[in-house]
Image 1 (spheres, each protein chain N blue to C red):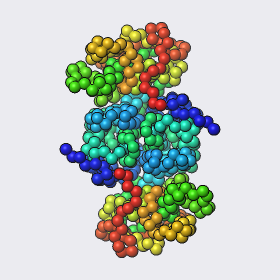
Image 2 (image 1 turned 60 degrees about the horizontal axis):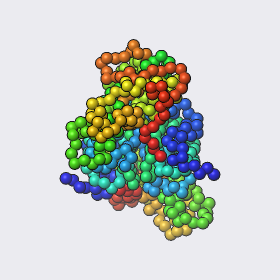
Image 3 (image 1 turned 30 degrees about the horizontal axis):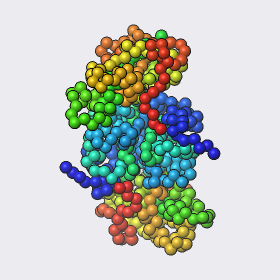
Image 4 (image 1 turned 120 degrees about the horizontal axis):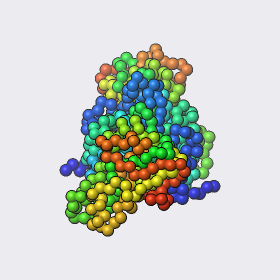
Length: 308
Length: 308
C-alpha cells in the first residue's frame, strides 16, 4: 500500500494526481469555463484558513474582504467579471461579532467588485475557514496557456508589498510608520484588479494572478503555454514603500518581488504594442520559444508559498 | 462590546444575523436561484468536516460520495438537476491515497448523479474538510416556502436509518448482522433522491431535504410557508432494518424517524391527488392554516443535529 504523505508530493503534485484521476480537461486553470445554455460562465473557489492565511487577531472585516478578493482575482485573471459568490464558513465557538464583522468585509468587497452573496453554509470545525466560490461571466476566456513567442510580459501594480506587510505584522511593533501601515494594509486588504478585466479579456494571450509569488506563477504560465519567459530584474515594479522597508530592515527588494506571494497582481502576455498607458502595467520581460523562466539570463526556479 | 458566542445563538441564530446583515432576499433556502442571461441556475454549498460529519476511519470513497450527495440532495429539494461541482479540500498531512480514494468516491457519485467536477482548491488545515459547491439547472424553482393549506405532506423513502447506522458504527462491534451493515451503509453512502427531480419540479408546492431530522426540517418548512403541519406518527415510513435495530437494542423507532438527521430523504407538500405510485413516497400528514408542527395533535419541536 502506498504510504506517501501529502508533504512528500506537495500541493502541485497532489493536483496533478487529482487531474489524472478525474481525467478531465476542465481542471487546470484556477478558474473553469463552463457552458450553460447560450451563456459562458466561469467558476472558481479559494479559501482563507485560520493560522495559514490569517490570524484571529486580524480585523475580521479584512479577512472577509480578502476572502472575496482572492476569488475575484482568479476571475479577473481569466478575463472574467465577478457576479455571484457563495460563502462556506467553518467556525469554532468564537464570538458572534467576529462573524458579523467578517460578513461586513464580505459585503463591502462585493459592493466594490460588483458581485453579490447568493448563498452559503456554516459548520463547526476546529479552525476558522472562509471558503468562497465565485461565479462570473466571461466574453473571451483567457487561460495561462496562451502565451506566444514574441509577446511581451507584463505585470500590474507593484510586487512584494504583501510579504513585507506580513513580516511587519509578525514583528508586533508598538507603533508603525505610515509607509509600514500601507504595506500592512496591502497584505490585509489586497485589491483584486477588476480594473484590468477589459484589457485582459480584450488583449491578453495568457494571464495568471500572482498569488504564489512571481517566480512560481511565471513558471506556471511558461509551463502551461510551452514557452520560455525572460524577465529583466531591473524592470520589476517596486513600490516606494517596499524600498523604504528594505532600506530600513536591510532586505533585498528583489527577494520580495520574486517570492513574495499574495500580491494579487496580474501577470500577462501580449504583443508590446497593446500596452495601455492608462493602466499601471509594467513590461518586465519577453516570451520566446523554449521552456523555463529566466531572470537576467539565469534560471528562475519557483519559490513562494508551500501548502504542505 | 457584544461578547455573545456562537454556541449561545446556534447555527440558525447565526444564519438569521447574517441574512439581516446582508439584507438579501436571495439567502434563506439551502439553494439559491440565480438568473444568468436567459438561463435559470441554482447554486448550493455544503461541507463534510472531520470529526463532525465523518471520522478518518471511514472509507474515504464513502466520504467523497457523501460530500457530493448532500449537495445533490439540496439541489433536488428545489427541483434542480445537478450539473457542475467544485471541490475545495482542507487537508492535514495525511496519506495521498486518502485523497485519491476520496476523489474516486466523488467521481463515482458524479457519474451516478450526472454531474461533473469542474474545479477545486486544496489548502492545508488542522482538520480535513470536503467543501463542495454545486451548480445546477432548474425549470421551476421549488422553495420551502410554498406549502398551501389543503396540501398533503409526503416523504420519500424511509426515515431514521442513517442515525441507527451511525450508532452502530460507534459501537465498534467485531462483526455486524447484514441488516446492520445495511443501516451503516445508509449513513456512510446516502443516496440523494435524483429520481424525484421530475416529480418535485412538476408537482411540489414546497420541498426540503431531511438533513437535520424530520422534526427540525418540518418546522423549517412550516415556518417558511407560514402554515401548520400535522403529522400522523403511525404513517412515518420505517425500514425493516430500523425496526430490527430497535427491536435488538430496545430503542423507539419514532425517535429515530423524527430526530435522526442525515437521511437525505425529501419532505414535500402538494395536493393528495398528485400522489405518484411509481415513487416510494408516503403521505405522512396535512397542511392547514396556522403555524407550528404537530405530531398526533401535540406540538413537535425541532430537534436533531446542532452545529455549535
